[in-house]
Length: 359
Image (tube, rainbow, N blue to C red; front, side, top):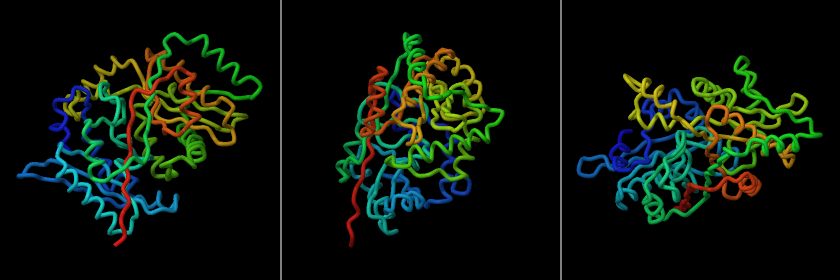
């Protein structure tokens, strides 16, 4: 778990992960991902020194949902050495092949529902630090993967949006879009969080059903997510869209707590909490973590309304800028919608795949 401290020691953009959170994700007896998946963890040593790590995993729920046999690798960290990278990736390849998989894909740590960090390796945007729950990797990772026979599966885009000067235009935009459609927007009601989670789950499982990488979230995963976000979510930064009381869309953004995590060296104790409380006052931007609209209610401008309302709310807390991530490169509607709002792509992440040859 501590290998990244050595690999990124000269990278000013890297943000140390919280070790306690990483332990929870890897704990097969506690994290809900492992209820429907099997995984193995490997490290590579050279001359007695740890020089790489990787996980191999099979998400049975995902394979059943998509009617495929795909294994994944994740938590990939490696020195700039093709021999080490090949040893790690071949080990993951062999592990999933022995279990009947036809493809190896990654990095995914672990799935799109249970991200410790976002999928893929960074291929563009190395000069900016990652925001909360997003990946940061060295430039050489893409070459290592490609030299080991992996090809691009999908690019994921991160948009940067600055709405410091847009208030009146945006307010008029919401009014225009909602006129005649009986659409209401409201913020999260923390007093009835269980019911709110049910509404969000209803939208989530409908909105993303046909998306690349989507897997329906289990009850345990939603419960775990709800418990995890309670300490950090600002209810005014979670927006629900409803029509006659029916939830039709939602969006969640978080302050970029990486601004504080960068100073904590991966630990909350003994002094990490104090550093967190001190540095979180300096957060001036957010990350839109997720947003979705039920298929039957698309093309009504609800996605734009959600984005606009989120940024209006975040500006009240001194955070008028932020990242929207991640967005599939071929999600044309979302890419165009972000562009219309003035957002620009400033980071690109790439997920790779390799077919498994039958014996």
